[in-house]
Length: 442
Image (cartoon, rainbow, N blue to C red; front, side, top):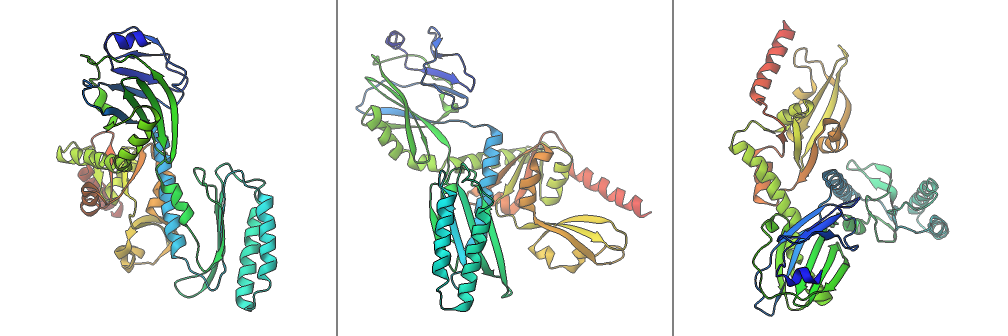
């Protein structure tokens, strides 16, 4: 391997995949050789880079993202959105006294330990002087004990449980119990009985778990490492006789490399310094990806390709036709999906209404007979899309309004749109729909 470096090339092309790409080669025309064992199954990576002449005391580090499957990214984004929604709901809940229990068990914790702890807490709570508060606390502890009986052991990713009596907006008391296994391991242990639910530990689930690769090079060798969240791992390091100059290699580097930073050291010290220097860049990766996605959507619109839809009605029509390839939705879209039934005819109709439309009684009456429509079901459109998007064969992307592109998407396009697989004239579909209604009325 050292002989290949001695021939003057510092460009490297690496490809490996689950099940194993068998080889990797230098970018310049060099002999192909088998991949080292340290290139383990981290997904598929194609990395090609080139370094300029080493003339300073600073050594370059290349940073790239290890790509995951699209389906994995979509599922993870949906789970993150669900956690955000849950946190918002839990933080707004309030109770009388200390009747709201927050319980979090990390992986490998013991159900028996927590069950014993709850038993001890029950005995302590029995001594609360206030009868109302005592009964509420005992009821919450009993609810937690009953829910724990449904689990033989703590799930692989841990267990989160919230239970207690909350006060609704109209002043009524309501018992709630929420328990679930997080979509990834939660490294927190918590038990609190308070007048509110404690969600601080759930914010850990919102942190990015993207895995980034680091390649640290100096005149004596190279280190390959990864960073995911707060976990740093050195995959491999080796020494070489690196030439001072080279001529070829790395033409496709920009496609994969996120950034190049200069560090003062090689090896693990350089790895640690690179993590510090690149923290801001890595934090903005999701932000950059969002800008690119919405930019692609705007490009379809500006070129009038016909491969786009925007607004609730048009986007859902395209979705029902199976035309949507990528569904883009603002994570705070405030639209509810109603299933309404006409009691006179037995027919059902689906309406997607925002807050203003929900206050208009006309939306809850038959347009012809003015008969009041019965609400059969009501669900957030976001939640419905998160549950049903796979049925339409599309990917689902949640975006924010924090970037200029995201803000424009929310304000100008209703916060929902789609990039289509093929051209679709939405205006002709609207006209056809109107004609169908006219013919039916005849």
